[in-house]
Length: 320
Image (cartoon, rainbow, N blue to C red; front, side, top):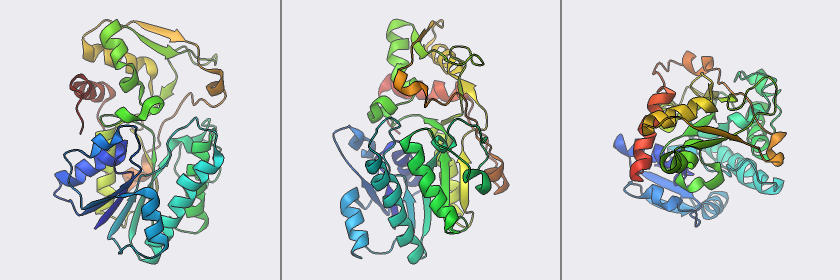
């Protein structure tokens, strides 16, 4: 039996599809099925049971849940704009710590989601070397909550017992419920399709032209392949970056969207909300050396091909 927390969420539901495609359905999905619409991510997927996240935590802490074979912990509050520090602490740090301790006590493999938000302004680089991880200074409460758990893993010498993945900018089907946290592709495709234009944030740094802020964008289909690779080889532990290793600009994203839609690019640059300006990452690029050293050899889909594939889903309103 596999525990998959966040299994109705974006990446979690795509990984659930991957497990099903591999003939695996002895899965207990744990999530918080609110009114966001993410319950649709569970349609046409096979799993043993579904449990609300608070109910599951209660069962674990009161020793009322049987020991699984594997825990994949994707559940978290992923908003980067909330200001409730206690909410992040409980949902992202304390919850993760409880599940990890349960897994370790029962000698169960544990894979969890960290984030590139831990890298903050990038001044310490983007190496997932453990010593570098200790130096990171996230820019928002979400990143801090993920950093706290990474540090808990390192401070307790658990990097050789659990597997963490620092997800960079993941995009793709099944993110439709994420509202403000949707990728620009998902959020702006109706604008491209219906208005023939796209709006992007201006740059507020002289070393980056408007739209030339860069991120490491990774297609969700590639992300779940890495997750599955590490799932099959639980002895390959540690905290790993999960991006493509190639930073691309927001202009690149926009141009790929127009190309996929068969339209001429029209890009307008708008003011960034002041609340974001001091917490905005202008550049991210995963150092993928550590993951590659484990033996992962698959190439990542190019940004242009990934955007084209994704827009096929957006056109039809389809899910993975």
